[in-house]
Amino acid sequence: MNQQSSHSNNVILPFAGQTCIVTGGTRGIGAGISKGFLEKGARVISTYQGNDGAMMQFKESLSHFGDQLICKKFDLTNTLACEKFFEEIQTTHPEIHILINNGGIRKDQLLAAMKEEDWDAVIDTNLKGTFTMSKLAVLKFMRLRYGRIINISSMAAVMGLAGQTNYSASKAAQIAFSKSLAKEVAKRNITINNVLPGFIETELVADLSPDLVKSYLEQIPLKRFGKVEEVVAAVLFFASKEASYITGASLEVSGGL
Image (cartoon, rainbow, N blue to C red; front, side, top):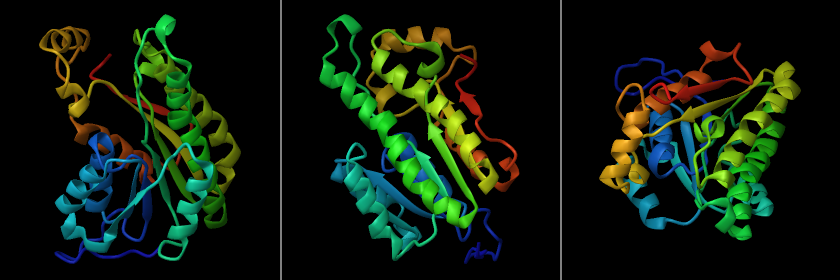
């Protein structure tokens, strides 16, 4: 991998010369992850499904990174769209080094009232999306004999929350998926790990009622919600060379839940 120096002070940044894909990378935690990798020298391809306004705002806020950041719109549940995405970036980014499976949705409802289409939508986006993107990335990583996949799972995977049978199932499945895949690709110097955020300060938390906020804070030993930057730090660690002996692992960023 080529090492590029930062323009300002000639310091070699840890991800210089590497290309990172961040699915769901233009809002919330995904936007923070994209920014984190850009600041550490990576070229970043942030993908999103539908919110053009949020993408434009995100891109504008990071315009000083120039062509180090590109944004691509497609549906993670559509295998052909995922394949087309990899074909399109091949000419400009022939080598991919890092994949962050962050794209995901929630459609909360008690199981007895949950619509089948809401179950399917969450599983298709969160789990099938992880499968398709990981499969396509692994094919590139194997040729390179190097790669990092980090799945943004959730504390819902290990705790369970009422009204989230679909979401919890998809996030727990990401962890099991990672453990198996980690064993398949380890000999090619490819690692697969998971970050499990708890309650993090994003637009999702901003919509909660004061009573619900109070209830959640009472459950958290550290008595506060996490910051996006604290999740990003865990992701950057798993993607770093210092984490090269860690694979199939999960790191909780939850304030002690």
